[in-house]
Length: 224
Image (cartoon, rainbow, N blue to C red; front, side):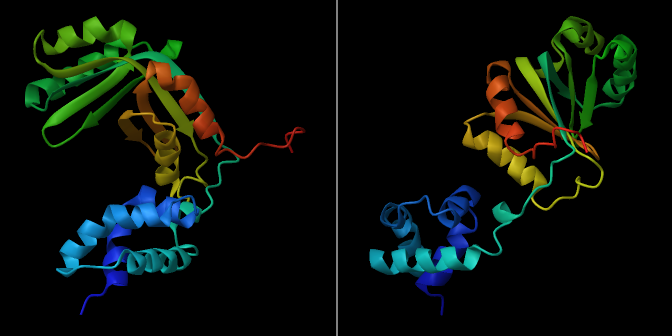
């Protein structure tokens, strides 16, 4: 028979931010117990004493401390952080014609000048991200009115990670968590082997840079 502790555990483990707050002991147990009490009672189909929930939360905190992914150290000693401002994103339907048109976009972007282009293909859509100065040309390639969505006033936050560090446990979780704690909305995430690229509002760029920089271990001053 399912008990209060099991229900509370299953519930909290589905909410990573509450889970972390619990592990870091920055949560008010009584408030959290009151917040989840209706859901706990619904799962158990009976009234539950709030103090039983508080006790379950305290015990769960002790269980989580050693295994919580948020405690996994991320090694970013050799990482680089860069911000590219004045960026835009366009999404079009995925079709044979639009797939062919993507090749035309590569001839528009001047990579030799440090400009960039990322292309992500889903099952039904293609999303392109590039410098805003290419916006009109890229949109015209696909045809006016054919874009499903265009987002401007973006910045690209690029975190470049060494190959040795790219498989660090909880890496992406910790990066996105750092941004979320600063109330920074992530419009898009693009991942490659050693790069994590976050598309964010341009106004959030300085805060995003500092949030991610706090995760990077400072290198020795003598560069040893």
